[in-house]
Length: 58
Image (cartoon, rainbow, N blue to C red; front, side, top):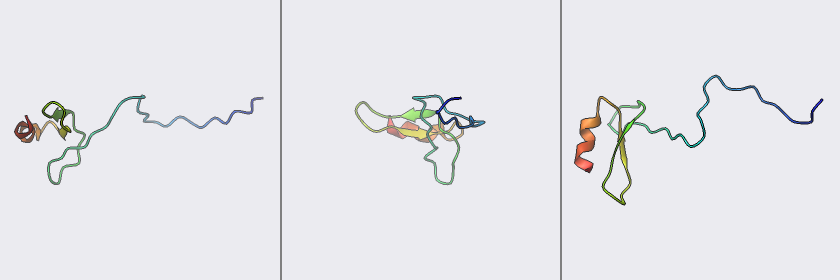
C-alpha cells in the first residue's frame, strides 16, 4: 500500500503548456484560436466566426 494520494482523473484534462483563450468579441464566449498582434504587443484573440475583427490589430 502506498502513502501517495491519488485523485481521480478528470474527464477533460488540458495537457501542460496549453493555453485557452476566449473570443474578445462583445457577447461571445467561444474558444479563440486566432491571435492577432504586432511584434512585442499583447495579442488579441478571436474565434473562427469573429476572426475578421482581429485584422485591426495587425
